[in-house]
Length: 146
Image (cartoon, rainbow, N blue to C red; front, top):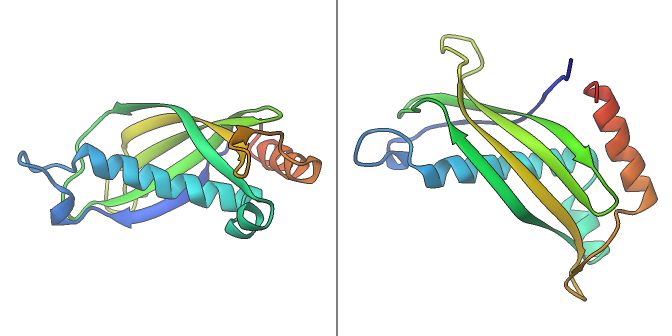
């Protein structure tokens, strides 16, 4: 069984809500994006690595399923697991939950699956992850049971 990693915790503010009173889709995407960068940091794709090595990450495919509403005042958590790791790309899944079970339901509010590609920012083309980073990411996957 896979263990998911906490990659985001935040709050739904009133200005995140649309005309029908629930969090607008743009904020789901934004919170998932923050979770992505927290995941990347946990697996070694840090801002320092990206700057120093002239590397970047590009999302090339993303699917979102909305399961339940989130409203102003809800605490939101995102848990993440890596699904696949290849020489130049990574596929992962975020689960956004209403709270973390403490006083809120902990129900899944949305799920997204993202395919990210590692790239050389100078030539603007995909490139393989360096061996040390690949090993670090594989160890992270093993720790989650994958």
